Length: 290
Image 1 (cartoon, helix red, strand yellow):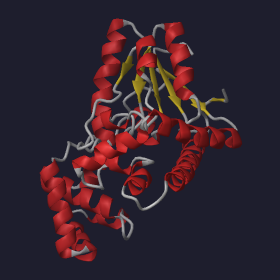
Image 2 (image 1 turned 180 degrees about the vertical axis):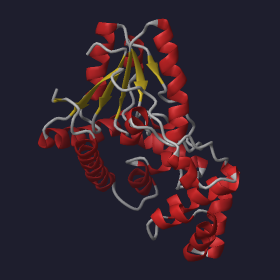
Image 3 (image 1 turned 90 degrees about the vertical axis):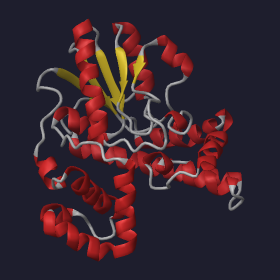
Image 4 (image 1 turned 60 degrees about the vertical axis):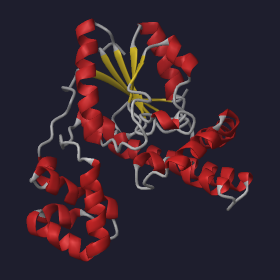
């Protein structure tokens, strides 16, 4: 690995953060977050964000920079990471871009639409339109102005339908037009790449052990703090693995062990989806199994 930018991808609990930390110390590199859950300040424990001790051992960027009320999209992350990469290049410092969110790596290597941020008011208006009109009527209205987006969104996918409507209303331009304009953030042959991919049984065991560690570290307090804010359950932070199941325990609906079992299963399922995504989308990337 000799390029100024190194992409280190992998599923949750794969050991990619530890691998990146060792590499960062060896190369005096900056670790840059490419994990959608680790963006949120409210999810340090549930997202297994690097500890304060690890952050002191090497410089970390784009970790814990968002509030749970914010809905960061791939485009917003791309707009944050692009100038950061250029800044580090200007300083002559290597960047290790580390995470498990596949679409972030797609933005880096293949490109993604640079859609402007949609304000909360527009997202809320789109949700209200969905509730008032119903899915079919809102889809029909969308189809009048953005037939490609309306046709590509699966039945029952409220999130994508309301997002397409909110983008259209905010920008005056169809979402499909924005999506047609894609360019990679990184030029070919300017970066190294690696997928951290342990044996599946090893990975699942790590997922299970991680849940117990999270509870010991205060995951319930983290969820309790989110519950007190009464945030929209559709926000990305509120959909993080563990939030729903630990909230159910805090509401007295399930025991702690039942909640932990559910989180263990959800974590394994999440890791499996990530493994599948990286195997399908990055088959040519080198693999490592720490």
